Amino acid sequence: MTTLAIDIGGTKLAAALVSTDLRIHERRELPTPASKTPDALRDALNELVSPLKAQAQRVAIASTGIIHEGTLLAINPQNLGGLMHFPLVQTLEAITGLPTQAVNDAQAAAWAEYHALADGISDMVFITVSTGVGGGVVSSGKLQTGTGGLAGHLGHTLADPNGPVCGCGRRGCVEAIASGRGISAAAQGDLAGCDAKTIFARAADGHEQARLLVQSSARVLARLIADVKAITDCQRVVIGGSVGLAEGYLAQVRHWLAQEPGIYHVELSAAHYRNDAGLLGAALLATGEKS
Image 1: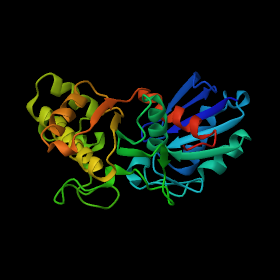
Image 2: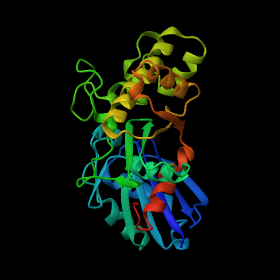
Image 3: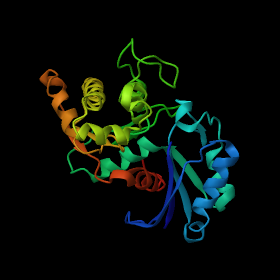
């Protein structure tokens, strides 16, 4: 059975046909609409999937935000421009005429990455560092989604009580400091207004402020991983996302995690499926199995 998998992020929309053996066919991408209104998102999704829908038997969505009973609820409204209560499943069923289900993108990616691990690992955590910071938890071989869809939103745990206000309303969340948006917001002087990609490039060229901004992100993420180890006693933490997979970033996270007491150390690895983890995880979950 072919699944039309869709990945909805803060900066881009992706869709692909995924076969039962997890092969991706006819992948398409569009930028997330700048206005991020319900009509704009609906139109963009229609444009994205229309060339693919006739070849699929079902739809599986991985989306940023909280997914509760098929509706998109953005814990950090900035990541989707304030788009709240968008009827995601209902919209895609109307566009495609196919049975549809939806899950948070980091939860979906966690499930894909769990299936890519070697046998013997039953407890793992996936963390994506991109526009925001998200996560997914697999415990005893089962994906944790929570009764309200909140499980795994690790980016909204506390990093610094005196830190910047996060888009979710809390002060000092991991996301407010470590994410691409957080890195960019902290930039000053000649880096003011630069996006995270530019700041990483400047850091690689030896720019001191850029280097410190990237270091701050990596250090905050390492502290989060230590907390995650304490809470879940996971066997592996997998890092993904455009920031998480940036050259040299994981090495910095490993360096800062090594400064923590040994009991909080855990094996780290880069996402196996990289930017396709959300698409593949959603397709896997569409089989109806979370364990």
